[in-house]
Every structure is written in C-alpha cells, then in structure tokens.
Image 1 (cartoon, helix red, strand yellow):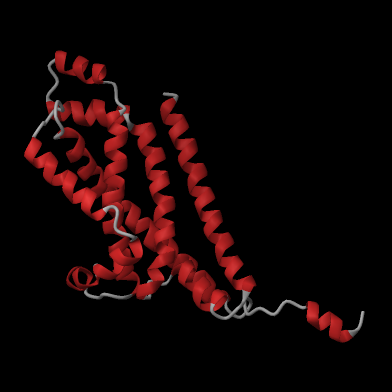
Image 2: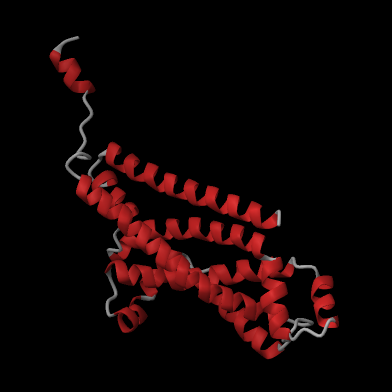
Length: 230
C-alpha cells in the first residue's frame, strides 16, 4: 500500500495530548455526581418522606402541607435541566458565590436531584404494605419510630434501585452542565471532540461515562438484591 494511502488511514486525534484534561474532566464528573447524589439524595429523602407521611391516611396526614409540597415538586420537576440550571444561576451566586463553573453546576444538579429523588422516594414508600404499619401501630410504636424502623427499612431495597436510577440521571445532568462551564466529561467531549471533529476524543469520553453508569448500576443491583434477600 502506498504511503499516501497509509496516511489516509491514519487516525487523526489529539487524545494523547489531551490526557491531563481528559482525566481532570473525569474527576470533575465524579465530584459533581457524587456531591449531588449525597446532598440531593438526603434532601430528596426528607422531601419524599414529607410527601408520603402527610398524604391522606398516612402517619402525619396534613392536607395543606401535602398540597404545598406536591405543588412545589410538580412545579420544579418537569423543567428541562438545561433551562433549570440557567435559571438557577442568580440563586447559585448567593449560595455558592458564583453562577458558573463546577460549584454552580453542582449546586444546580443537586437542586434538580432533590425534586426528582423526592418523587422516587414517595413512590417506593407507597409500595410498603399498610398491614406492616398497622401492626407496628397496634404494638404501640410511635409514628416517628414506625417511620424510622419500619417504613424506611421495608422500602430500602426499592429505594436503593431508585437512587441508582437517580445517579444515572445525575451523570446525564453533568454532561449538560457544560452550558455554564461546569466542566466534566460531557463538556470535554463537546469542546475537544464534537466541536473539533475529533471522533476518538468524543468516543473516549462517552465510553468512560458509560463505564461509570454501568458500574454504578451493577453496584446498585447487587446491593438491592442483598437487601431484598434479608
């Protein structure tokens, strides 16, 4: 084969030169996703419990409070994330001191995660058998004790699967966070892969993102299976 033909087959990519930026972006994705899942997961659990416990017939039934919580979640949850994170910039400047960058992106992802996870928590708590709760009440357990020692443990397996699903959605959000210079692999793939027509760079970033998601999904499945087999 002639030299020009060999040159035409050579892969033109800057992936080797971009190794430092690539692994830095991978670290940013992990930081953003982990922080959002940790903080957003805790707040989402609290909000989801509030939604479930204040609904009609529940342990802390309170219709006005339930309506308020339900409206808040229904208002914010359907907003497309690319619009949500841009609209949240003024609040991010007050809370984390900046409207762009990783801190602002993590703040936006965390707030979005709270509303999404709260609905996942509520839906999984609904699946707990009312008979289990009634049995605990008949034994004289307080409402708070039933919530912490009966309700949440009974729903723990499905909750783990729900949080695994939420983490995958959060990783998707980190890819969109590039619109406010959020960094991460999604932004890296857009800047150095898509915009510079470097398919190798773009697919390298995609494959690492896919690997992250698959590992988290596998871990969540294994953990949930163990909990459900107790």
